[in-house]
Image 1 (cartoon, rainbow over the protein chains, first blue to last red):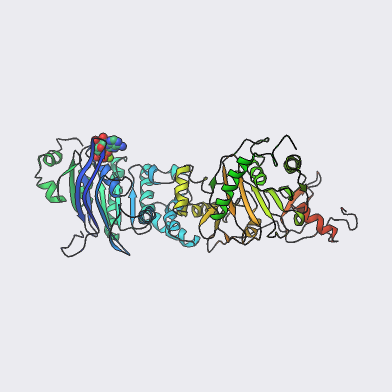
Image 2: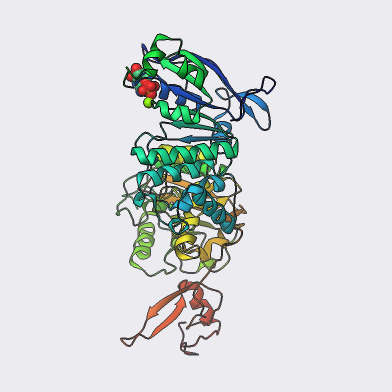
Length: 263
Length: 289
Ligand SMILES: Nc1ncnc2c1ncn2[C@@H]1O[C@H](COP(=O)(O)OP(=O)(O)O)[C@@H](O)[C@H]1O
Ligand SMILES: [Mg+2]
């Protein structure tokens, strides 16, 4: 597994990130560094602030305080919260990707599978139909969707296929950072296993950095190098996945790991 | 004439519409919201175009109104009569004589001049509407030039039909900035949008939008490198005037499936015939005077 080396600069640095909903805390004072090629899992019970945090990181929610610094290709580290909206959108369709729990939120259900995969390419200026289609075919293959489904709409796909299509649609522009919110959440257990396997292969092959929110410890064990445990909007423990899971320090993490808590 | 202000609308309203037009001219291809008024005709009869025309007309103008290229359809006749009654302006069917032309579904074949204004009736001004129904989102997409979706639509066309099947309201990019719906003109007319000496104004009544192409604006039809835009037309010459370079209507002429192709621009066809041009089914010397 690719690990952070002491000398590499972080790809993504978060400091003091806080989001309130009125008086209620969404997430509070969250900070971490993510290095190139690293996968970080975020776990915690329902309501602990995982989705709030992920949406603040990805620019879907505006936090009340903090910094979200991304190492951009052209200008080096930039605080994405102070970027202009066009810059942030450009980032969101090139170097970043977001995989929603419900594939309906991340796909265009009225557009063919090929069109779904091709959209990000066209959004950044691809203008050769044949090349777009060839790339879409290649990506359908990589997520194990038969080539003859390229012109079918995802509404006729199974849940697992829709999720794989959403992943292909997101990864087609070769992003450097992928946000995932419960990517295996709504799927049957057997389908989950296959999807996890596929995700793990893609993450390694592409050297992707990723932040994965999940309530499923099996998912983090399989995918995440590092783990962050949240409770009540706060990070209560973070570290290498194996360390946290095998030797949890915080009482809450101990409960999580011993499966006393149904998260 | 005493029953109405000149050209029906009150002066306040015309000023408001002119401000929207000026803003549209200043930002080519940008849809300017305006407070569309009730007009004494149903939506779908060009209430947007009629309001733009009313705001532009002067007593010296010569007005031409066309619908699908013809001056004599019910829609064209009623709009023309409306302005004859309410503005007392001169009217014509000859493109070259008109100073203001209101149109639905066509651009005249005869080249326009700097002395002319072309007003389009627009049913749906938003080119992104088909793919993104949320108005707030389409506005943001225009603001951020987030137009990948337009090519997704063309991609879907090719994937389904083997070619870009969009034949009307073919989307264009204006001066490299705004994507615009040119109203339901055939794509054959798209090249005439670009670099036109005439001022082109677009009015959508129900949707309350005005947009514009100032003279000599660069307008490019969207396409793919390997599926370039083609301004196609029926592969025939006009059966009446013999023109091989005009947009044609197909007309059924008998119960046995007989058909003929004629210029959709009736003024253009007529002036060619008067000049002695004869098509396959035309009768020399027996043409309209
Ligand atoms: N839109 C919202 N308005 C008000 N409170 C919210 C909203 N979204 C989340 N919250 C609250 O913020 C806290 C964190 O929620 P969330 O981020 O959804 O947690 P998780 O994803 O871990 O289940 C919870 O107390 C939740 O009730
Ligand atoms: Mg959640």
